[in-house]
Length: 384
Image 1 (cartoon, rainbow, N blue to C red):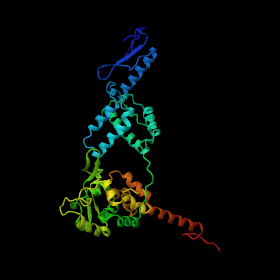
Image 2 (tube, rainbow, N blue to C red; image 1 turned 30 degrees about the vertical axis):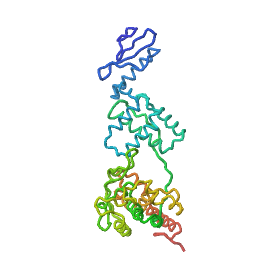
Image 3 (cartoon, rainbow, N blue to C red; image 1 turned 180 degrees about the horizontal axis):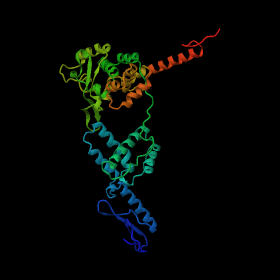
Image 4 (spheres, one colour; image 1 turned 120 degrees about the vertical axis):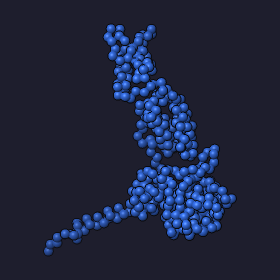
């Protein structure tokens, strides 16, 4: 429409209100008229806003601003519901993060009004309130995933405001690396019905949920192999559920070291029922092992404290097994298969952390340099 000077506007319209303010609007790609979110005191500011919107439309980044008015809490709740393939424990974690750390602080904010500064302040405030960096990293990754969907495929915002460097990183403390002798010592200290469980977890690199979900049919002949086809997960309000392993690569068959097979065979004969679907490792009443129940029945806290390993986690057994496997010179692909990872980053971390062969090569090269410098290396010349 023409402005007050008679100049025809190329894009959009500006109307002067009875209060002397300027209201800008334009026809969007959807054929509907859209108004600026606020009015302007100066016409040139309204012009500038329209120019910006025209640029967004030309670049193909335009989104309907009405759709971006959905509150983050509602959008995140719907995001969780629309992911039916989430593992129960993952869904429970997402709901807890949303309820505890996201919705109370950002839940009422419209998705389209979220900014990088707002996300950064939210994270800083929660850390200052005493929330651990690990929990905040999980909360941030959850929020980023939700807003990634808002960008694509939902197209209600053009850019994810989760742009805080390092906010997605967890920096857990270094875990202890058990020796083979320590694992056998631990296995000999716990009650006999848990001995094979300790050894199999360590030497087959199993997770707690994987080893406790094993059935007799999952153990190969003479305990030569173990098939991981499912895992138990503890879901708040639902109890212990059997589901797929943590990742797609978690479904795997692992060769059991011959040295510990007799202990597993003995365990099957003493503590495992005869049916194919009988759980290999159970409590005294024959039921599935839950983590608190295992800790109590195995006297875990006292046993590891008596060994001088107070604070040792059950997962540290798997950690030790991964370290030993990486020292065996396995390829990254083979290590991933044994660990049950479909992401090579974890395997590479273990390989970098335990590259003794590479250190031996470096030491050998250093010896060659020393010999060269001392005149004893190949091709060195001596003078008389």
